[in-house]
Image (cartoon, rainbow, N blue to C red; front, side, top):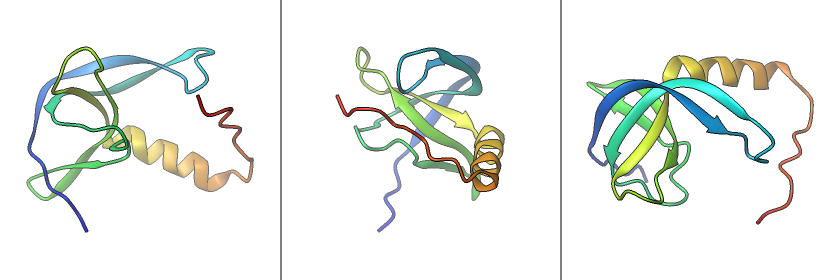
Length: 95
């Protein structure tokens, strides 16, 4: 069942996000949000005026109501690369 929550895009920013294994980082274009994002909400799609605009990937652990989403154009490129690859991804140990 879809759940709709309000969000406000505070700014369009370059986000230097750590890789999942913390071995490096990636620069992404996206949005700094004011939104109530809970643990496990990563991957939620932001919709504005009926159009997908971004994908939530992180929330602040220091500031309540602060989160980040990649621009939907970034998600398109990641999905296309994943679809073209048969390589397994090592997600490492759960910590």
